[in-house]
Image 1 (cartoon, rainbow, N blue to C red):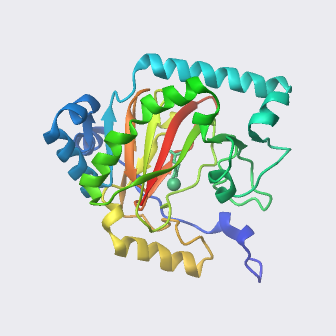
Image 2 (cartoon, rainbow, N blue to C red):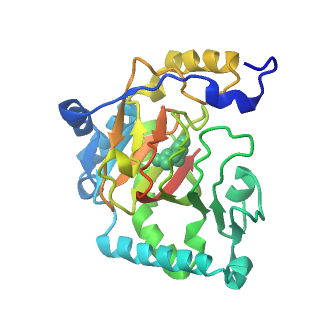
Image 3 (cartoon, rainbow, N blue to C red):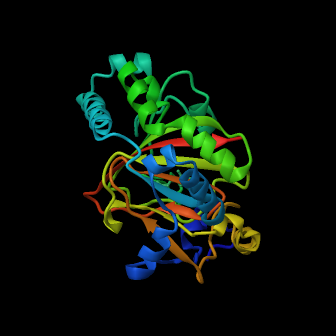
Length: 298
Ligand SMILES: O=C(O)CCC(=O)C(=O)O
Ligand SMILES: [Fe+2]
């Protein structure tokens, strides 16, 4: 081991991952967080039950939240966009977006992406220092609703912001506002970030799947149920992280814990509290996953 440990030493720091729930145990846990979107929309009682499940477990899944025709229209627009990028003719995109290609960066830093006046098409690349968790291969599009009028309408139909804000109010007793919309395109992303939380402040994300995520190879979202409420669990990792020069928000000590991989169909919506321990499972090389993501904060 080198005498001076820099951040480039991170891949060698061992972290303890949770075991993944499978079989009947997975189905049983899933039942407590699984709701029909139309029931949440139409029945006050179901909305309250879903809000309560989100408060308790930190995550819920609302089935069939987005119409299939809308999903297909968005998928077709994504395909056209990727074809345009691959064509190498970027005149239109350079004028209307910030196009951050792997070898050609025009904008840097999360805050600049979030506050940008145009959509940001950001290709994630391996870190120069070789640190793990780079999400290399992922295309993260900020403000996808600004790419075209059709996408604006179709994305709004998927995200259902009024209903979700109502649900979050009942769940957290806080007025939450949409702070950033993203489109995640994960094509064979192996080096996903391990279990972490998105900071310690109150934050929720909704993920509307645009593709089916049926197996671990597809890279499901994984969550340690109830971890958003367990301060001591976070502190255990925080102490280890400090000693080992890991980031403060890595959930590096989850050996005794169990995580739920959330399988979903295109059109399903997962809502999670981002204080909880979560990660995207590493994908198989040929896997494709697309999700619309909405971030809610106070
Ligand atoms: O890709 C995923 O499923 C998880 C990404 C993540 O950690 C996040 O959006 O906060
Ligand atoms: Fe995260």
